[in-house]
Amino acid sequence: MSRPARPHLALPPWLAHALRTQRGPVPWSAVTRGALAAGPLLLVAVLAGRVSLGVVAAIAAMLAGINDRPGSRRVSVQRIGMPALAGAVGVLGGTYAGDHLAAVALTLVLTGLGLLAGSVSAVGPVASAAGTQVLVAAAIGAGMPLPESGWERAVAYVVGAVWLLSLRLVLPTPGSLVGDFRFDGERDAVAGVYDAVAALLDAVGSGRATARRVALTAALDHAQDALTGPRLRRYSSSSAERRLHAQYAAALPLAEAATALAWTGEPVPTRASEGPRRLAAAVRDNTHTGPLPAPSRSAPALRALDDALLHAAEAFDRGKENRDLHTRRRTVKDLVRSVFGAGGREYGLRVALCFGASAGIAQALHHAQWYGQHQHWYWLPATAVFLVKPDLGPLVSRVLCRAAGTVLGALLFAGFAAVLPRPEGLIALVALSGALIPVATRHFAAQTAVVTVLVLALVMVGGEPQASVSRIGETLLACAIVLVVGHLPMPGQRGGGVRARLGAAGRAAYAYLAHVLRESDPRDTAPGPDPRAHRWTLRREAYRALAEARTAIALAAAELPALARHTEGADEVVHTLERLVDATTACAVHLDDSGRLTPRHTAQLTELLDELAQERVRVGLRIPEAPEVRLAG
Image (tube, rainbow, N blue to C red; front, side, top):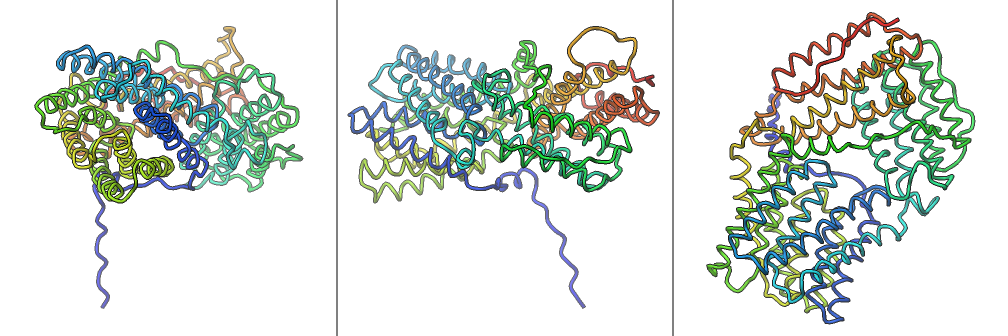
C-alpha cells in the first residue's frame, strides 16, 4: 500500500513574503553604473585630500543607485533627481540643526520633519523616495562629525547623485545600441503594450483572461511612465518622438476593444491577435507595419478591434498623433487629499514617532557614552526610516530582512576589513558593493547586506575604526522601535493607506462610469474635449488606481494578523471595482457601435453597483454615490 501524501504546510503570509525574491535578468547596465558611481567618487576624494566630502558624495551615489530602477532615461531624471534634491536639503538643514540645537530641540525638529516627510510620502513612489532621502540625509547631516560646513556637504551630496544620474543619461544600454540612442526603454515599453493586448486576445474565453487583463494594465502603466519625462513631450519637434507617442495612443483603443472582448467571454479567432503582435514588432524595430490581418466584424467588440487596428496602422505609417489625447495630471486637490488624508496622516505619524524616538534614544545613548568612541548615533534614526517605509514590504518582513541582512553584511565586512589594504582595498569594496546594489534590490535582506558592507567601508575610509558590532546593535534596536511603533494604536481607523488607495480607485471607477453614461445620454450636449479621448484617459486612471490599490492590499495582507485584520474585505472591494471597470469598458465599446445599452449591460452594472454599495458600508469606504444606470437609446 502506498503512503498517503502529507498535507502541504503553507507558510504564514508574513513569513512567505520575507522569503520571496523578485526574478528577472541581471541589469548589467545598472551594474556597470553602480561600479562607476560611489567607488570612483571616493577615490577622487582620497587623492584630492577631501575624504569626508567623498564619503558624503558616495552616500548620495549609493542612494541614487537604489532609485536607479528599470525604465527610460527621462523617467530616471525624476526618479533619481527629485529624491537627490530632497536629500541635499536634508543634509543642509540637518547640519545647521545639529550645530546649533541642543539634543531635545534637535529631536523635536527631526520629529516634525518626520511627520512632514512621512505625510508627503503617501503621494507616490517618487515622493516616498524623496521623503526617505530627506530624513536619512538630515540624520547624517546632524550626526556625522565632518569638518565641512552645511553648504559644502550639500554640494558634495548633489555631486554624488548627479554623477550617477549622468552615467544613467550618457552611458548606452543594450536596448539603445540597436536603434535610436534617445529611446532607452520607451520603444520596448510601448511594444510590450501591444504584446499584452495580443496575449489578452489569446486568453479570451479562458480562465487566464483576468490575469492577462491585469498584465495589460501593468504594461500600459509602464509605457505611460516611460513616455513621461522632461525631454520626451507630445508636441516635441522630433518626429520620432511624436511617432512614438502616436503609437502609444493607438494602443489605447486596442486595449479597450480587447478588454470588452474579455468581458463577453466568447473566444475570438486566433488571427485576431496577429495584428497586435505585428504592431509590437514594428515598434521594436522602428519599421512600418505592412498589411495587418483583419479580424472578423461579427460583434461590436470585434468591429472596434478592427477599427482600432486600422487606426494604429495609420498612426504607424504616418506618425499621426491624436492631439486631443492627454494624460490628466494630479491636481492640487488630489495632492492635498493624499498628504492630509487617512493614509498620509497614519504614515506621517508613524514615521514621526519612529524617527523622533530613534533620534532621541540614539542621542541619549551617545551622550551617556554608551557608544564608546564611535560617533554613529545618526545610524539609528536613518535605519528606522528605511524600516518604517510600507512600500518596502510588510512590517515584520522588513524587520526580519533588515536584521538578517545587517548581521550578514557586518560579518562579511569584518572578514574583508581584516585582510584588505587601506584605503585602496576598501575603495574597491565600495565599488563592488555599488555594482551589486541593482541586483540586491530584488530582496530587502540582500540589499541591506550590500548597503551595510558599503557603509561600513565608507566609515573606515573616513578614518574611523571598524564598527560592525555597533552597526548590528543599532539595527536591532531600530527594529525593536519600529515594531513597537508599528503596532501602537493611532487616531482614526487603522489601514488608512489601503483605504486611501481604495477610495482613489472608487472615485476613478465612478468617474469613468459617469462619463460613459453621459456619452450614452442624447440629452447631454455640453461642449467639451473629444469624448473618446477623454474616456481613454479616465479608463487609464481607473485601472492604474486599481493596480495601486491591489499592491497596497497585498502588502497589508502579509502583515501579522493583528495588523492584517484591519484591512479584511478590501480585496473583495477592489475585485468588484475591477469588474465594474471591465463592464464599463464593454458598455463604452457597445455604445460606440449601437448607441444604446443592452439589458445585459444595465443588469451587470446595476448588480455591481449594488454589491459596491453593500461593501462600501461594510469596509467603511468613502467614495461618491454611484451614477444612475438606465437603458440608453
